[in-house]
Image 1 (tube, helix red, strand yellow):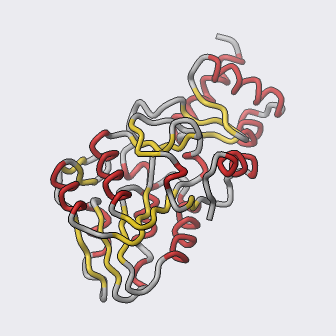
Image 2: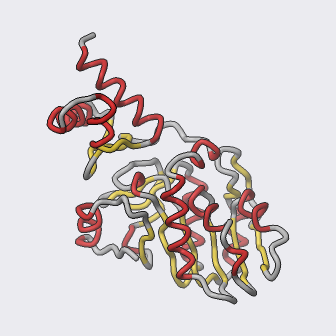
Length: 251
């Protein structure tokens, strides 16, 4: 195996470890030119090992689900930034929905500053985070729990949501694509997320830059169905423009 193949395998190892890689990271980590880095990503995409994005690459698809606590260590500062932005769309007395996920977990950690808030969630870890918060009413759906995500889903979760009216839902996803829409790894969780969207007056998609142009298994819906996207400052202007041209809205 030549040096080029070894480098490309190392690039793929980095993508699999973090879910994505930036072009600048390849240049710095492997001491190559930007042209070489672009060529490496082009070849890896041709081999269907990754998908090139504006300024880097992501996994071709999420064939292996990343456990929750591993995700918590990825893009931590970006998720905190998103959570801070999300707070601008929450008011005292609101009724909000939080799907499972690490980004929504960061939002949950900041909700103690509001008064008379009602939170509806299908995520056990989020419910645990919020238990005992003064002035907060917490509603946890029923359902079957998945230990990879701590989410409750299935008919019991959906039946609970069918009897609720939500003002604003903040929804996390595993992947976002212009052509495929918003995606998640598990079929039952995708259906529960769709149900929460349906019962909400507004839905905010919360996703860090690494989720864009990443593929997953089950489609929740089109990005254009949401009220808007809340992302971090690392998303490129080109990526934002592409989604805006397709009818999506960034907040």
